[in-house]
Length: 443
Image (cartoon, rainbow, N blue to C red):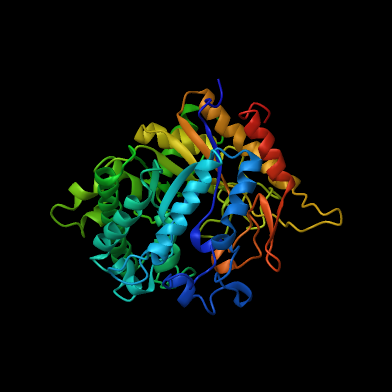
């Protein structure tokens, strides 16, 4: 048996990457609106992006035409709370209208509360360094839950703490563009402090959702992290890959750095140094499912010495130069489910391709189709072996603002002409529509 009849075939996006309308209808500035000058390729910005704020009905109609069963979107914190303690009803109205449009199209909404767009007023208080941020996040969560939970069942408080902490506060190539020296005392202390605040915010948001939601909520996270896979199916190789994936050293990109405190109530000794009495009571609230954002395994990345960890000369790579590793979804689902014993949703998977409009008026992207075939076969194998998989969200529904890389990297199933905002479904979108119709039996 492969995918269940209830399997959620979908796609995903993030507010900053698609919405635009950065200063309309009362929205406040985010750190990506205000701080990205000089940090984004070609001096581009997210101020207009895909203009989804004004075109969401057109976009949902496209989703319906493709047969999507689910759509994962994120809410912009500064659109809902433009200033401290202030709720912007026009901002909430946008998301309420989006949810209504999705439901009328037969599409399940999956709501992410934080996909990296920290309000500037929160940043000025210290951002994720600020001890009180978890209370502010809980207040924001309350406003969104009160507005949407009569129609939204699936919630993800956070998207990739690995990235917004790691890239934003340690490595410095994402907003707010702060950095620390790797393997230094400052790095470790900053990682511990930031992680505590994120985990507390997740715990408080989860409590808010469970206590205030109208529909019985399903709460998870969209997370990524380093994944290592076996070179063969031998028990020794599988155990070695699992041990490397869940290794004991501290690390912002360790899956279990973020998930063990929530799911198991256990923390790394480095994180334990900053925890206060009562923190774990807030943090240890196990998820109902885990969202896994997976694009690759890390076996073929360059190591600290510049050499590939596992050698494969000339291996296929995407336009992000990420290795194409077809077994990533299989091993990710397997390792995560074996460790945490909850269902998995693939909350992101896809590839950046060199896509452009051809003379025939179409966008042909055979590499993306092949990529998705390979990865979905691995996911289907996991489902056939009995690992509980709830859904698959292609990243992304449309080309969009790829953070510091601007608009060059096209991940979308739908091509966006940024000069005209015209949407053109790529060949991969049409192929994916057929996969959905067949419930994955044709991959």
